[in-house]
Length: 154
Image (tube, rainbow, N blue to C red; front, top):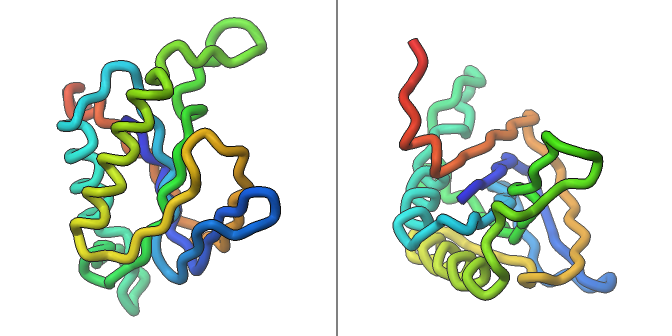
């Protein structure tokens, strides 16, 4: 599972010009599900996102997590995070989960985000969406559950 996280002052997602989800200060989370992901990956990514210390203190040092500051979360499904571009000119999405399983794991992750007590908004799975945001910082990070299996460098 991959999550592209952007710290935002505000963000919203619209479908056909109608806002279906909006947040104030917090995190926009673009969430992609791979064909190898499990419920364990959903739990891992949610725990990592809400506890990652990426909110700044007065000295602009990353000191607090989403949980610490009561951040709002906008979670948007994003299968293109698994686009493979090494060969040819058209991305291949063979690493992405099939729609039914991707939706199940996306909904599982959303439920886990809601279990944290933070305000959670979402887009609509498989819909064509327009995402608007005001990036704060900017702070943008990529998380990948496969990274926990890889040895650290150094």
